[in-house]
Length: 403
Ligand SMILES: [Zn+2]
Image 1 (cartoon, helix red, strand yellow):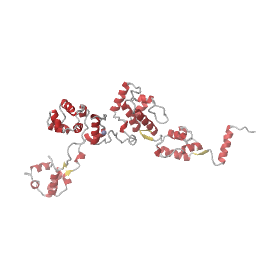
Image 2 (tube, protein in one colour; image 1 turned 90 degrees about the horizontal axis):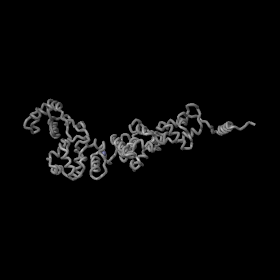
Image 3 (tube, rainbow, N blue to C red; image 1 turned 180 degrees about the vertical axis):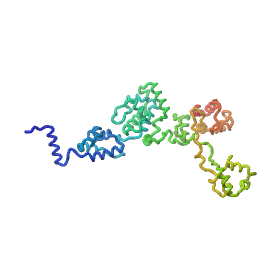
Image 4 (cartoon, rainbow, N blue to C red; image 1 turned 120 degrees about the horizontal axis):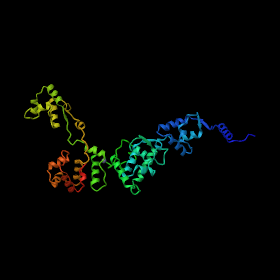
């Protein structure tokens, strides 16, 4: 009698299964095709293996990676495991690759609260990429913060975001972090423009193009006003964000105007056969001296209505004489520098303190014109004492008036 060995038992079982139309080994083709789709979705082999294991088909990442490389056939369980991983993108599989910005913003927000990268790593709050779950060292997190990686997996992002949401509620000093480490983290975060977690939501945190939303209206004059109101009129301090600065501070203060085209004007005059003298009459001017200057390009008409009358007299279009898109072509202003007098904030403070500009000028003993120049960014107060006085009268901290 032939002894029944494990090998022959397997052989018998395998033969029986094959006879029943359920072969143990199957061609790798269908599994490979499915795997390629999963990879195209951004899933890593590690994540595919983890997902298959969770679905009841224990599998190591190397099995996935080597699929079809050595043998034309694979075990049917391997195939079943691979096929068990859904292609549904909306499941947001943990293995999907996402932009690094989400993890970066979550960690940045924690640093702003004072948590250090080392502490976060040691406590297991931030992780290395999938496959290394269970913590990582501070230098890995530092590379995330520095933006050295372009992407991470959805799983890593989700764990990091969950940690950030949990730790937002606590203070690092209460959790035993040292004071010097807390200040160092806070300073680093502030220097690098990290913002609180509350500035992001699920839709924006993973979008590299999104700007942090501090006020609910960031990037508008209203948003700017909310920053000032919250910071100096009894709210919590929410420093001016970049979007608000750009929206308000870089916009040229001058009213809409146009660019005069002297050469085009000269051509129109020549081709129409009209004299400057006659044009001066049409416009009700005493002499044509001004028109000669317009023609020479020294300066142009001030009002659009004048240009309209000119165009009528010359039988041409207004756009033949001026460039309308002047505002958009105009050079943007620089945002107010730190420590510089901030006319926009000053205007909002006056408005919130319900004080007219003239009244404010009277209160601190400067002329109305001086105050107007300050508030329209034409001049800055020569003495800090005047600003100090203004702050006292308005009942706000003097910092409110500086960029
Ligand atoms: Zn803002």
